[in-house]
Length: 121
Image (cartoon, rainbow, N blue to C red; front, side, top):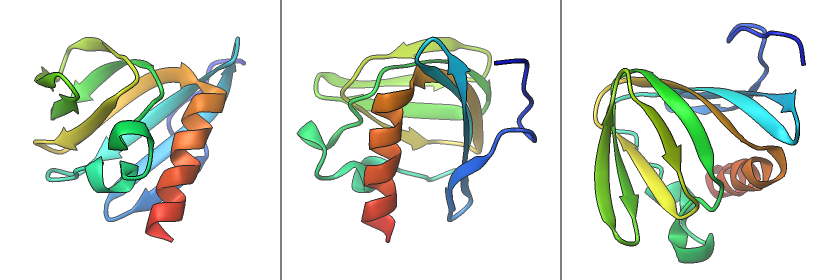
């Protein structure tokens, strides 16, 4: 993949202020630009996945905002300016308007996105 910007990356999921743009980056990974408005809780959209949690790993960076990440073992808060790795088994909730850029295995992330689309359809 050549360099890409948020605006050049196609929208694959939107609704309720949530916007997810995703594009294959190479090496089996995709880059995603994600906006979650304050109060967005992805937990309900993940119901039906194993443990009712996202099963895709993500490596990323919070451009702005704050996220509470729930896992089977508890929760942790991530803030603007932090890089992260989220292992499979998580459900994010935006505590503030949040924008992230992250890299994820394309096949696993597509499976999660398809599940979320089916839940909201």
